[in-house]
Length: 98
Image (cartoon, rainbow, N blue to C red; front, side, top):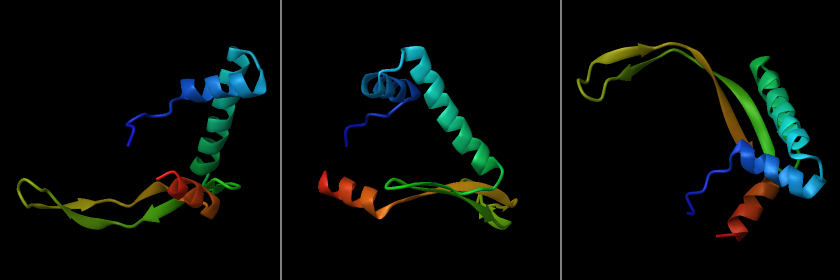
């Protein structure tokens, strides 16, 4: 693994290089897209990006956890979590790069 993490700045630079918008416009576009995805997930909607994957909101029920140091049981409350499911196209592209 390369250990490289793609950042907002990297996405902005890619938009700048590929689309030809100014750097400020590219940054605004990236922020708008990420904000739209976040707002959709917050409101409970799933987000599907064709040939990439889906972001889903799952409700996890209450459960009992365990403190690893003491072994004490601790209740973990119900919560909502975001799950990413890659598309078959993305899975195939990633597996070819191995």
